[in-house]
Image (cartoon, rainbow, N blue to C red):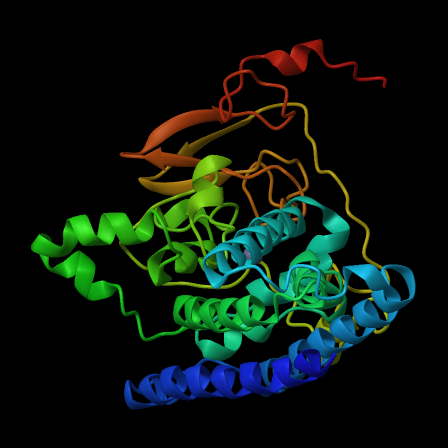
Length: 361
Ligand SMILES: [Zn+2]
């Protein structure tokens, strides 16, 4: 119990030192002169920092209380483990749990509402990492795992792991893109390859924050990893890029107030059409006839989920589902017939599948 109470202090000092270092570099690089952050963003991200710290302590307290009552024999049961064993043991379970939790937050509507605030940020930076609803942090399986591991006697591994994770997470959100040099110098490309295939790099995570796939750099529906890129590679969601998106945030952002973003569902957004407003209803916008039109040269996002109100194009409404849009690259002005019924076997193009639709249904 004594080690447990000391844990957050050491961790807190290390976290502040890491944030201080990256924050100072961001400041020197002029990030805070050019930031697009609104007042609400500043409040949200600063309060978010304390919400994360407080929630971690709450989880450890709850876990110790429950475990002391139910499994007192498990207390410090693994204390004799060496750090060589306990650090990878703690870190890998932590990271795979976070991968699936984060991925679920993009694939299930109810959880997306708690993670969406993370993607509303139009600006990257060390504080962007602290944007999530309180419920998102409270339900994070890896925070609970950290409590379990500490109770089992692995506190030194948990402290090391948390500090290590903090370095990765801060660096992957920071505008100080330390990996840039690896891509610029050709001789360093093999080093870049090895690093990006083990750890999450700024370029890898920035792609997750990019506005849409239309820039051919971003994939907001991929790159879910937190510390290691292993899980994205294993489960088919990795998109390696050595470029950074120019635009971050959501395609359609209702600009919710900070308190609703942080405390949904206890407080809801007054903004009409917002996914976290009281009146929000998710509706499909399926047509029947294809859209016959001429597309000029450029990249287009074709809606595959059917929820976009800008059919047949994507407006970002697929978030919170397993769908993602299809990128349609048009080289020169072309006449197209785009499917709106979503039954076509050759999307985005119409294959007359709509003729089989039951119009009376
Ligand atoms: Zn995300």
